[in-house]
Length: 332
Length: 265
Figure 1 (tube, each protein chain N blue to C red):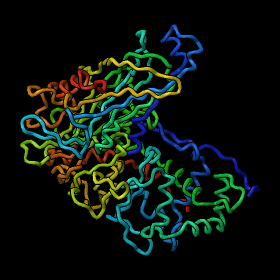
Figure 2: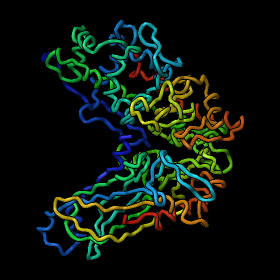
Figure 3: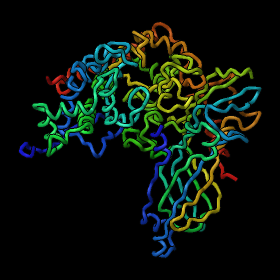
Figure 4: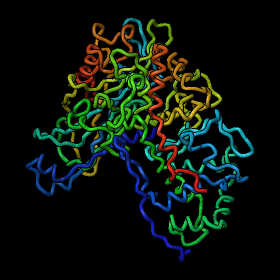
């Protein structure tokens, strides 16, 4: 493929104010061609066994790169195990991907769904063969990674390209961001909700939200038992326990980001709550006591107008520009 | 929780120039004689090893307590040489017992390795409890992932302060075996509440070339929240504080600074 030009150009990723410095692996810097390749792969059903499902089948841009199902489905309508987690600001999630944290990097995460029988149900050997024989992908791989031979197209490079594209998915233009920048003013209800969310009022009840949903990512990237179930007994889905086998991890799941949360219903790892109202009521009750339940989940005493205002604040985390960014949209 | 482990083992390298300026009087060729110092923090609750989640501890007034998290920052970590000169070995570290969930883990404690330490005789160590003022002027966005001060969960943007210490767990208020009272104490600085303070610990030790020397330190959480029967956090009255009740945060931070951290005997 030496006749195809290879002139890698760094992808200019604007880091938002107030975010921790981004963690990009030294062996997978973002390039324009790499991100472009990853975007094509993200939207291409060629990765699935029957060529019906792509990453974007469960991660829809209109919904903050989540979907609208409680539990996502794979090829042949196979029911998966968990709710599709929204993809936002993944460049800052330096480890612990998936609800249970079983992938240490975005690159490792990208390898998994292809061979998951409930998702794409394919084999990497088949995917590699399809891409090597494809009319255009060899060119895209050459432009992205400077390959000399078509045979060099492999799962590792697919994962790297997908990770590059996903790292370009930065959401930091919500009303809340503009408020922080002094460019927008919150309504009375939104401001009241903000104070409840961040426990910043001596008068209003505390929402205790920001212990785990910490700005600006609105996730601490940590794992908690948030009181959904009694975890003192084995659960059908043990969350982080399925990875560590540590009984104190039973029922712990990665804290999801709340960015674009108004668009990512249903909620929780199993999509059990259809609305934000249900979510807030769950926390307002203080959750189910278990040995490892986070002590930060406690009865809140929120009244109806407190809940309404809290939801008003959560809507300020909707980044409409993120939903319409052309460079994140389907290229096909 | 590998990210936490990474935070815990954050290592700062010394500059030879700094050493020469700070510990004058040594011959230049001594500079090549460098060793390692491992600060080892063991957690205890009174006479017992401090174990998260797996252990329950008798508490005042017939209560019992079980912990899920105990962590605190230390800053401006200095070794004190025999001649009294101070050698800065670290800017800041997070001492976090969250993953100490067995007696085996408790016996190992938490290690912080500091390399390139000049060989010689030392008589003590000093450190600030909390985040030093100049560092507390910064925010997680000033740091790259992996730095102890990069973790957003330990920072209050509204108050522009790091959370110096967190204690979380559950209490059984009446000894019936039900640990249903949830405990969350998060202590950081406010504009009118300065909490940072240096402590100094005497300990004679020698650093030898290419050798690791352990400085064994002990942190007694009981001394932090319940130093005596007349002075303790009464969970029947208070189960939560985010640095808004002076009687609570003062008790915690003062005790952490005064006696809870010691050289392990």
